[in-house]
Length: 142
Length: 66
Figure (cartoon, chains in turn orange, blue):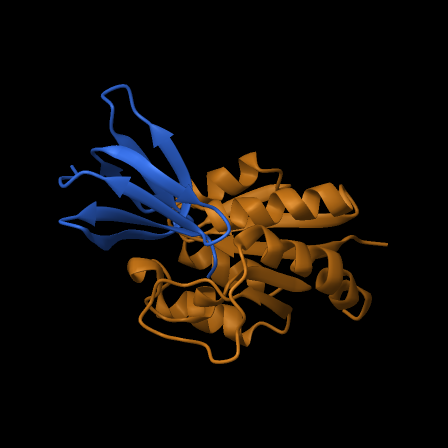
């Protein structure tokens, strides 16, 4: 049976995506196909270094690859046009939002916005919750 | 977000330097490089006065930063 495909998307320095990939890799090893998609090449290469199976960067890579993913993981801003200092293009945001893949989004952003009801947690705690509690449930149902 | 925030003490008042600090690295020239979880960075001239980890606060003491 083909492995489930999880796309981790990040931009700028790729720090959040790299953290997510490290945790997923530690928990799942090679059971899933882990694809790193960067809004820029630096973010993509950082995520590849963190243990992704493949990486790509840029608008077309994100638009094309997210269409065939089982699950998309990243900061919530990957669904916001012009987020990350404009790195997230409207087409990228639309592609992620429109993908039939289940999205697991981290409430981390620098934009002038607030998500009501979100409890402030350090990044490692958020990623632990994502990997240890939610990701398996999602993969079981896609 | 709940990472540490960095402040600097100026004229007895604390001013926010950076939110969500991921890394504090001393540089050879005596400054500190602060890197945030989004990859943003600043260089702080001065010394660390206090790190309050339960409250997620790093306090620097000195007026100028590069």
